[in-house]
Image 1 (tube, one colour):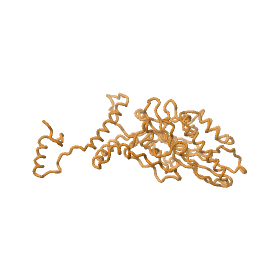
Image 2 (tube, one colour):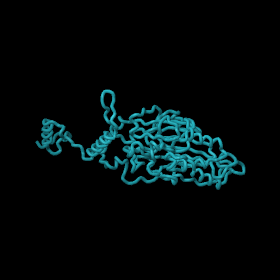
Image 3 (cartoon, rainbow, N blue to C red):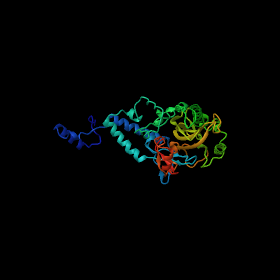
Image 4 (cartoon, rainbow, N blue to C red):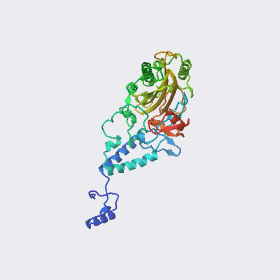
Length: 401
């Protein structure tokens, strides 16, 4: 028997007949069965396709008493991510953390999103992309600490090989060495503007060589960066050498350099997104300091599972001295380091081999959840000292990567 147009197949013949009688008499108009709108069906269908794709990609795993059901697709921005960790406290120090899944919250959001789209008539592609089709306008250079962390998108995109920064606040950040914008040089603490300017340039060279050189990021030796350290600071030079040759939890090369294990992850392309600033301050007669505070976002592909993409977020604070050569010993073109701090989001907890070990989505099934607090690696409104006091050395998690 053909079904009447608009008829809800979930109603019995008796219910449908009652509705027709009420409609003919002008009563019960609110009881009219409603078929889901085309937009709602599109959203629900898209989510089902993503669930099925996720199920096909997951390895088969047997559990005691039967098979485990595949986990639904979950957008990266809806769950806490891997490891906000390895905080370098003071001059060294370390912290770590892992991913936390938010499956229950995801189901609630998905259910609400379908009904919201139907009621508000929001374009499907716009919502699933986290915004409009127009590229986001780049952010201006940072001149001071922001008042809050970047907002989370309701439905943020997942990173891919073609769009490795999709769904990340770093989409609007500048990339590479050009993102490190030097402040205007001025005389500080009895040190001339000319010497301050030269030291700013040297510090930028170090940051680029230690964090942006593709060869170094992919596991190579950071020789150009090491060559910029002051030879007079022998103790610091020995510390860096030991961190590379024999890393320990207290003296790890990741405190200085962003290097991934080449057997696990490779940088996608050669673009690293960067955001931060440099600030000048006096340190006494004939002495000044430059403090660099930068966050680097690395998109990486799994070597073992080609096509699988994630991101690692590294924030570094490096302070160097600038001195009057008439009063203090200094080698031109070299850096005298007074402080170095770092924090890393998404690297293996408890591994201290001088390399970064990002966790990819498929790694989540086998790894235990962290017990430490959760932090946002994109939140530059807090100092690393503030983050350190919250983390308290625990293996915590990040809210996104």
